[in-house]
Amino acid sequence: MYQEDNKTSVIKMILRILLFILVFILAFKLITMAFNNRKEYLDNNNMSHNLNSLQNAAINYFKSGVLSDEDNSAVKVTLKDLIEKEYTGELKDEYKFVCSNEDSYVEALKTGNEYRIKTYLKCNNKSDYIFTYLDSDSLKEKKDEEPVTTTTTVAPVETTTIVTTTNNKTTTTTKKTTKVTTTTTTTTTKDSKNTEPIVITTKPVDNRISVAYDCKGGTINGALNYATKVNPGETIVLPTPVKEGRTFYYWYDSEGNKYTGSIKVTKQLVLYAYWY
Image (tube, helix red, strand yellow):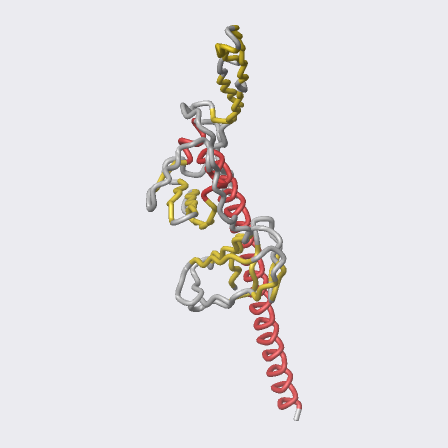
């Protein structure tokens, strides 16, 4: 009887040890997953911030008049060029390593009435890119205008002498005709040689807001990156991307704000997928 109780106690102790080991392994795995997810979030947030900084610097450069109006024409500028032209400084990753100045670039492709802006950034062993669509007018160089006044003056008075004879008397009549002095004012740009009045034809402005999705390796309807345009204040349902072996959690922007379900769009957005 004593031996059986001893044996039972040993078995219980072994089971307790095994249970403790299992709990320890499970807790370690959960902590590791949480740490990796946090690290991935911080890495993505830093990359997103650098991508937006590079894109904004390139947009300011494109506004200097380097873009072509021809359809399907492209202009590409590297991070190195932007640094040399003092549009931005060096970009660093979360470990303070300097991002590649030569491999990182921004390209503007003319497509119809807008430009597709692709921003690619490579930092250490990581790389990522985003797409943004901007109206052609928002990237055009603005030129100052000066009023140019053209004055045409015609001789104001013409004198006509009429001679008539009445009862052997000669009468001289002077008739004066006044002509108007006209002044025409036209406005032209500094580099224009045209002195004719300028007729400006305006077309409807596309006020829709761009919402772009970066799936981070996933897809939306088979596309790695997806973009759409909506009216200001419109409420949209956010799409759900898919990625093999991963579960989609939520969308987030460059400032770390989370987006799920449906949202009201009031500004241009670039959203990134968060997976676990």
